[in-house]
Image (cartoon, rainbow, N blue to C red):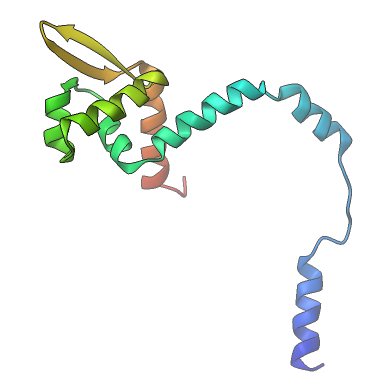
Length: 129
């Protein structure tokens, strides 16, 4: 058998030649589906987490509340840019603020946000577990 035929046989073995819809699996997935509005919000949340600068800010807030000035010094961004990012993170309940006099301190909104960060970090640090 020539090289071309061997290659074609290998490809044919790797392809699924049976096209079948498993109706019970499709129906189960439909039953478990979450509302579209929740999918939109979840998608926006992951987009927020997908930006390295915002992610860096969130990681800094894991066990540590910080003000805009602190975060600006940490990230190298302007205070205006940090404030803008914090507002976006706050809109999705990823961070919360606490006022002490004239200073606003930011921290992660709740333990769910911390869990998202920890799970993501664990996943990239040890992807084969």
